[in-house]
Image (cartoon, rainbow over all chains, first blue to last red; front, side, top):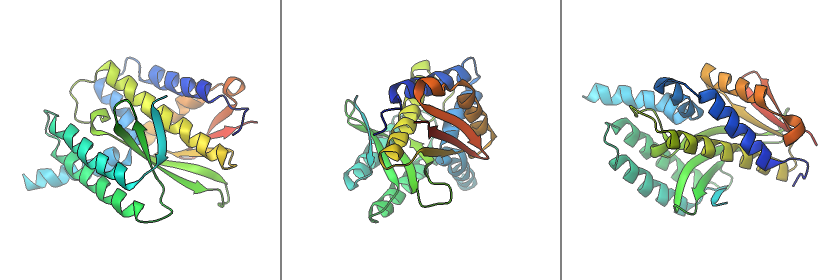
Amino acid sequence: MNKGIKFEVLSESIQCSLKETLKNKSINELKVLDWFSWETDFFIEQSKVRTSDVA
Amino acid sequence: MSKKLLKLRAEDVGLINNQWNQQLDGIDSDVSYLESSVERIVDWCEKSIAQDDHSLYALSESEKNSIRAIVEITDARKSKDPSFKFLNIYLEPNLINDYKDEIRQEDLLEGIEIIAFALVESLKMAVSKGSKKLKVYARNDEMKNMFDSLVATSDPEESGAVFYRQGKWLVIETQR
């Protein structure tokens, strides 16, 4: 393992950055976390279309 | 630490099927679209683990005895730009915000913690196999904006890792 990398510092830094970016955002903007997932970005949209067609 | 990121196993898929569907049952909103989504994920996991060299990892939490997310990571050390690639993270239904009318602060922080853990463990995996780079794929402009924030706030001197954008990718590269 590379001893030069401080993984705990890195983890804190990523969390702080995400928290800061999402601070004071609207509910819709907070859904940005879902965009990390293809499943919630693309496939869910497809599923919504499919279920609404059935209805 | 109670969280772990390990190669997906058959028993994990059983847990995902049970726990994620139980979570869906407990949600008041109409989440029928998520039910088919989870069904598809479970099916995909079952097919993947049948292959020796699959690229799925389970992010588990021992305190809750649960699988919080599935992460897709590929080993691209033999490509023109040697790296590990973080392609997707599939969050458990409770952490998905799409169907929520209100997002509790603690849920938001938990989601952030899970994503940060997955990124750091993926970089550890890359480094342990001799790679200096983890590349994270952005599927849309919002993710690119998020990546820009990570680049702007990164501190290479302190952490030992540099963040930069390369087209649609966020690159996290070790300096030492």
